[in-house]
Each structure stands twice: as C-alpha cells, then as structure tokens.
Length: 565
Image (cartoon, rainbow, N blue to C red):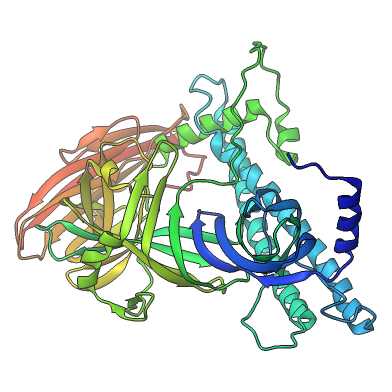
C-alpha cells in the first residue's frame, strides 16, 4: 500500500485547487437488463505527476454512484469518485451570472420533485409485489363465509387498481418533470466549441499519478435509465408446418448518451437485486388473531393473515369464474422493416443467419444474449428492435372456442419441450398465411408440459350459440321460481381441410343452499362438476356442420332476483 506523507498531502491540496482536467467518455459496451443497464465507457486523459481532479463528461444523467468502478494503470491511484449532473465550474461558466444561478436553483427544485415521485412509485411497486407474491398461501378450510370472501375480493381488486393507476399518474408526472429538467439543463449548457452532444452527468475523479503522460481510463457503472423486453414474430404458412419464430428484443434507453456502435448484451438478470444470502432465525408458532375486516378495508396495507385469505379467495374464484376471455384482436398496424446497424433493410431471409451473431448463455440465475453486431441505440426513450435468432418450433395445431363469451374460433399451437428454447415472457406479432392477424402473449413461466400459443381468430369457422325459445322458460312453484335455459351451439367448418376443435361451454354453480341447479342435457360433453365447464373434442371435416344442445334448470326463491343468469 502506498503511504501518503505530509508533503504529498500538501501537494494534493494545492493540486485540487488547480484547474480540473476535462475529458469526454465514450460508450464501448452495454449490458441491458429488464430495468437497468451496465455501461462500459472509456476515455483518455493527459495527467501530470502528482494529484489531479478529472471531470469525466458524457456519463449517464442518472446512475447508481455505489456501482461506479474506475480502471486505471498501476501508476495511477484513484483517491475518490463523485457523481453529479449539476457540475458547474468557474472554468466553464461565470457563477456570478444571476441568470445561471436562477437556472441552477430551478434544477435543484425539479430534481427534488423527481426524487419524490420515484420514491412514491417505488413504494407502490413494492406494495403491489407484496400483494402478488402472496397468492398461494391459505386453504379451502379458512373458515371464511362467502360474504367475507367477496369483501376481500373487492378490496384486493380495488387496491390493486388504485396502485396501478397511481403508478401511471406518477410516471406521467415524472416524464413531465424530466422534460422540464432537460430544458433547464439545455439552458445551462455553455459550449465554447462545437462538439458532440453530451449528457449532463459527470464523474469527478481525484487521482494521484506517478508518471506524467497520457492515461487510459475504463469506467463501469449501472444506470436505471434503460430497459429491454422480449418480443416475438410468429409466422405460420399453414397448420401442417412448424412455426417460424423470430426472437427479438425491444431496447430503449434514456441515459442522456447516444450509444453508437456498441457491443450489446441483453440479460434477464436483475443487477439491483440484493446478493446477500438469507439467514434463518427461530420459527415460533402462534395462534391466528381475529381480524377487524372493516378496519382492514380502510387501511392502506394488508397483514400476513389477510394475505392468506385473499389467496383463498383467488383460488376459489378460479373455480367459479368459468371460462376466461383473455383473447383479443391485435390493433392493425402498418408493416415495419427492421434494419441492421449499417442501415441495410433486414428481410426475412436475413433472419435465418441472425443467430450466427448471437450467443446465448444460460446459467442458474439468468439468460443472456451476447450480440456481436454493433448497434446504435439512441437516448430518446423509443424502442429499438434487435433481432436475436430465428427458431423453428414444431407445433400441433387445434382450434378452441368458448361461444358463451366469444363466438369466434381461435387457432392454438401446442409446443412440446419448450424450455430448451430459452423463451422469456413477451408479446408476439402473428403473421398467419402471409397476413398480419394481431398479437398474442408468450408466457413460458408455467408448470405445464406444453406451451399453448394463441395464433389468432379464424373467420372461416362459424359458430353460433342461440337460445332455444320453446325449450326455455320460467315456472312458479309455490314459493320458488324455476327457470330453464336451453341453447343450441352450431359450428361450421368453411375451410378446405379437416380441423380439430376444443369446444367449451358452461352451466352456473351455486354456493347458496336456496339456489339449486340441475344439468338437463350436457350434449355428450366431458363435464367438470366443480367448475361447471363442459368440454367437447370435435373433428370437423371440410364444409361440415355440427350442432350441440345443452340445457340446465335453476330453482330459487321467487322473491329473489339473480342478476347474472
């Protein structure tokens, strides 16, 4: 270890009072995570012997100061590193200028407002995480009544919606404050020469140098002003061929620095996650305390016991909510061509070779994509498309329909052994038979052996679900009312080839002993009595029509009204 003498410290104090040395850093490589990025930058500076203050310009506007690492030759000792995006030196501007002081004061106020918003946003995100992470605790024997269950369901939904809406509003406020901050920083920028656009972020590095001359410095740090999201393009020429999947990424950054021809790595890891190992402490059992539900509904948080009951509600609600209708048409959009960094248009043929430039590394914690092609990612917050590789997915196709909630047929593709493709959750564009048909979502984070992809709606399969009037009606029996519902489901295959279809419908269930339900005709379906869902596995020849009839009866007190029959 080098020893600092009193003389050296005196020289250091004199040197720090001297004019700082300015240099501009350039981005060499970037590792982008879902919510952050690790930037590698380089610069060179001509240092005298002794101590110097180096001001490194063109670093990110906002970064995690504790993650800054400075690589220097053995002849250079780094004494301290400080980050600022409000650096004003008497060698750059006149601090006696009242206009400059006014701008600086405004910047300080804006930065405080941004910090407040970021704290509020983080608090809401952590609260949502607590709600979402506690979804598997509890059990069916929790002792809750239906009324209590519904109260907690309503509370959970209301609180989740409130938090999400607050985050959206806070993000809009932060964006507006950032625009104002950028405008103030532009006013503050005084350049005596024409030079490349630079960010407001600066690193002040104090060093002690043994040999005068040019010194190369490597700068590494983490900033939260960059993101990437997996994105897919699914092309299906016909249902007898595999899916051509183009694995893409949408990368955006707002660091204040334009990344020009950088080596890009995309990672599914979390650089902000704590790396401290967990420590177990004694586990003492205790009796469950009684809960004041009125007090819970009016508070801004949930206790651990309430979390358990919310999870019971969620597990029960899956049994009674029936068929999900998560399918929706994607918005029609114009065709967009991806471009390579050199500006050449990337056609479909080039996708076949794009995998040669991407190396996929998988370990126990994350998946990373190392891309050899240099990319330009501008600091404008806009999504930049990066092609990673093309995959041919062997698929088994079938059609799915739930006409009670949506009277159209959906094409599903079943993918076996999907874990080997290193897929991540993301949105996908669907191109079926050469035509853009909409969007779907890919969610590989599941426990099923097969991955089901919704490939969109097929207009060539017509489905009707009509009430049979003469077989439906209402009867009054003393103190009870009896309603009969009968429906005919008609499916016609207008395609030129046979299709396999999974058809689902349902009849209602009741948790009230005064309401009784009888399934009169199940149409030869496979019936799940716990969920009320009926399933048919159909095979329709070209131009074939099939009809299925279902019927059920509901009996309940005639002085009551059921509003969801």
